[in-house]
Amino acid sequence: MIKKTEKKKSKSGFSCIETEKVSSVRNRMKPEQFFHYLAETFRAMSDPTRTKIIFALCMENELCVRDIAAIIGTSNSAISHQLRTLRNMKLVKYNKVGKVTYYSLDDIHINNLFAEGLRHVEEK
Amino acid sequence: MIKKTEKKKSKSGFSCIETEKVSSVRNRMKPEQFFHYLAETFRAMSDPTRTKIIFALCMENELCVRDIAAIIGTSNSAISHQLRTLRNMKLVKYNKVGKVTYYSLDDIHINNLFAEGLRHVEEK
DNA sequence: ATAACAATTGAACAATTGTTCATATATGAT
DNA sequence: ATCATATATGAACAATTGTTCAATTGTTAT
Image 1 (cartoon, each protein chain N blue to C red):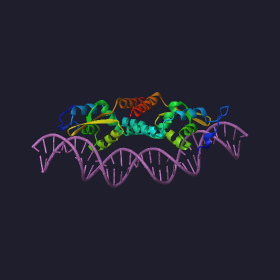
Image 2: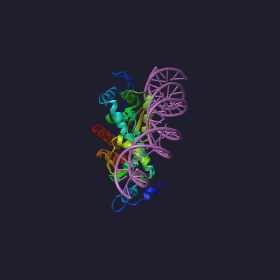
Image 3: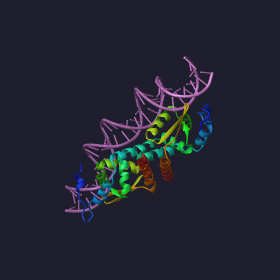
């Protein structure tokens, strides 16, 4: 566990301490774009209003905008703006029936992701 | 601001408000604080630099600040600031040995959460 | 046609966030 | 003691975010 802290240079010229570890991770690194998209996915879940929306959609798998607003206690406009964020990030999908738009979670990964987040919070 | 939600569902099902669904979810609603903490957990993962840090710590389960900076290609200062965010949100823990601080993911839920995020991104 | 309704959108605003640079701790070596 | 290294922190700044209000779109009913 305790290693020599002597400074080394990796092939790419960055100064580091444990060269093998550094180059091992660098070799498996994903493209820049990948991390941006991943971060955006988490960002979509990083607002309390949006976590409430997702929670509601976990409980009832299809809800209209007005009902989500009623559950959470905010304006339709606020919910609609947040749903657009979730829609853009492919976290929710929708189904329009007449005047009413029903939203639901996009796929099972979203349920799992959210459930894992719940578990982390409930343990701390 | 809540008056519209008093609207009742008609027998013919014309109304958009589905009162049973709404009250069913409302009854299972968690406290405000819960959603704030949950959102903050996701927020901690919502920056590309931080997703890279977490990715690196998934590959090698213990890394020092300088090596993380070398892997990602940014300054030690930037990494240190981001590690503080992750530390505050209990996503990482650390172990100081002499001058060197080794960071690792705090618990298995973080690995699971991150892995589920990866899966979502890789499918889209 | 008009009215009522469900949802979306645009603009403006305050609040928050991430980065950079410089400086401050803290430990180990000389 | 001084120097070098490893990390942490503070302050300032631009960029982004979430909310609100007002207006708009699209649908259904009369």
